[in-house]
Image 1 (tube, rainbow over the protein chains, first blue to last red):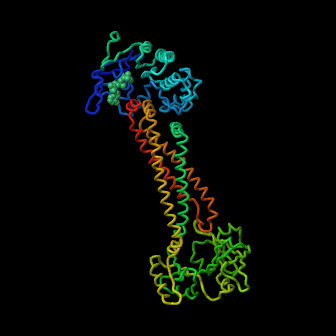
Image 2 (cartoon, rainbow over the protein chains, first blue to last red):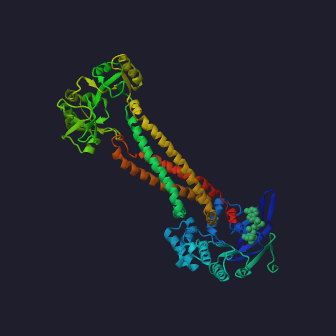
Image 3 (spheres, rainbow over the protein chains, first blue to last red):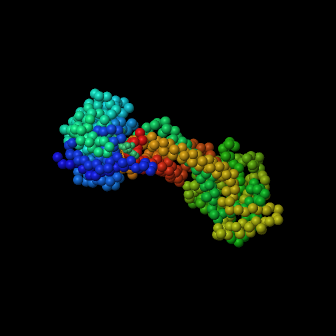
Length: 229
Length: 385
Ligand SMILES: Nc1ncnc2c1ncn2[C@@H]1O[C@H](COP(=O)(O)OP(=O)(O)OP(=O)(O)O)[C@@H](O)[C@H]1O
Ligand SMILES: [Mg+2]
């Protein structure tokens, strides 16, 4: 396996008024292509912040973030947006679908950033929706769907442009056990069958079990896997 | 262009708000279209008057006559080029309510002075030769369905003939048009000699004199020279440019126009605030969604354009409907107002001006929310929820 992500000496701090809040001082990590990593840790430990840096929506205060041999922390805003469109699919805790668009139109959004024709876009949307077993709900509005269904639409949206990387921030945080398991199985399928590299933040040890490995984040550092409770 | 559906869905997601804001814009542009048309119709009378044409009136007021001898004396004034005269006939056709604006004129000199009127040379000759001939404007001909060769009796509500009748018989010898679309052709002219010989008031008098100067720069001095010449006589004159004459005539309505104009612009300003505020709120409600779009890879400039396009669309939607409404209103009022405002047409100028304002409104109301969307930070937007 080749390294997809390489974080070198990443530091991140926020300035709030006169106070400087340091979240990471010296974070180093490598994620191989095809990996499925669960990130756990107490609230406020910086899990979301880390995921945002991986996804190119946030930048480290210092240090380097390498993705497939390209340094992304120094890209301009416009180039980062382009990079995200090509490489990352985001899955959020609260689905974040556009309420005025039906399932198919929501899934189509990332394809609006490509050169695909309307016909091709439609085909790809169908494929993605079929993969999450929601082809029959294409015309449904988000408000007409359950949480689990909305999350599956969100997954379809994340994978429709075929990115290498899926970043999930507590994707099952708002779902019951059975629905959560379905979602996690889908993620597992995407990892195993479609070779998507997945980084998933979760509070739920049962969810973390679906991943290939789990990293525990605490006080700005990764704690040895075996050592964490 | 691919974002058009998204823009459309954003615009229409709250139908009531869309209705209210676009209705406000609709009203503004309805008012704008109608009032601007009214104003330009009023102004066009003034604008069209030739620069070098002067009108000599009895100084008491324009309903009092002048001696016909004045024509030659005016002609002798230095700087005067062509001279003609006219009498108000006060005509109507069959019913007093069916007014026909009619003047008794000296045919040759009148057409010479009013060079913007266009007539077929054969028709012109025929009219010159026929004492009872009448020359009618194209618009008047259309309204009444008159054509060359028609015999039309016109009555006067002022004058009568020796035989007691107040109705004169005329033969339509020609129809005149204008060399410009806006030239008024809603009136008729006939031979002054025929009028003088048949009306009972007798005497050699005329209504007013119209003259051209050799150079518009001489207008003032020529006007003064004419009025000085008749000062302290039994009939003093008041000479002014045709423009000033027409302007004074419509001044009162013009001022009303100014007031309406002020009201329209206040309405515009209010709408600017209302729509601008609605747009800011609408975009603020979407903070999370905009952050999601950005995380998907939509660039900030693209989102900026989408918001701007949305406000532009809103403005054009309401504005075009309003302009269309104004067009219908103006078209409906045209016939009723034809007598006083022959040029009541919602012109291309007004439409283009309105379109310009729509674009401006869309820009101004969209700029702030679009800028907010442009600057929106994904992280803070997410952590705010
Ligand atoms: N924009 C910001 N400005 C200031 N501080 C911030 C900002 N974003 C995050 N933080 C702080 O950084 C720390 C880490 O936040 P982060 O959201 O990454 O935690 P988390 O591990 O995802 O927590 P949770 O499990 O509750 O989601 C917190 O103390 C938070 O208050
Ligand atoms: Mg978090």
